[in-house]
Image (cartoon, rainbow, N blue to C red):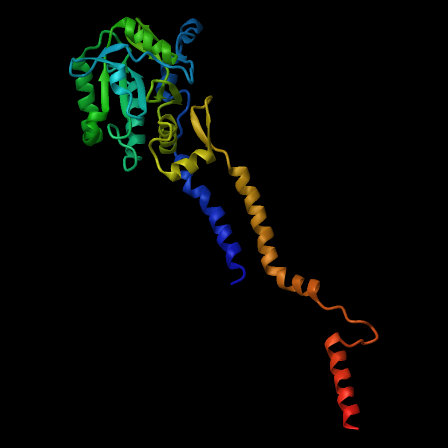
Length: 314
């Protein structure tokens, strides 16, 4: 029983990494997805320099920029912000034959895995903006309905917004978030990087998640941080203490692995302490007797009392 506290501590330290492992397994988002790599093959350097994502963390976008939603209604970006809810911004174009579909699929899949905690429309908004100025609201609506139907997201339909806009407004927004793309006339398609942005309720760029796969932990933590801790639970707050955001990879990585290793060493020290404390305590507190056999003080007092009784009796 005396070993139980140490054993419990060991179990706790071993279980903590598993509690945070949901975002550490599987395919992680990378700065270049398979479709992105295929799209760059054979391109000259001058073309490659025009494609990419320049991270502009902490900068604000203009919320007064006007777009058209999937129903043909003119809307300002400000209509998707506020109320303490962050916004996931997805640059894409709806007639893309591969890469944009992979990005949207990856986002849908990641959000489905955190649906029990965070749901579009309730806790955040998803705004998909086409960077093809020739696309229309009808194309946007068809894309939205197809995506939501296939992936079973009908419950959160109001939290997804598919926008189109003018060339000038598209350029203004894409420049603000550092998203560079280029139209290739020979291929008759847009060449672009892969990634999404998470913005605060006031339009500030908070996080970039790169690639075509978005893990649940990355999505959770970026949404909690971008909301200013207005959404999420105590567990999410603890996770934020245990993970650190890496702008280069666009991912969250565990920052307490070293601390856990130190904790494991300290736990072993505690275990040995529990095991050997009683013998050590006995050695430290053992009364020191003299070599001449001196009696303890209480025995001496008893002898004196006995002698006094004998003297009175005589």
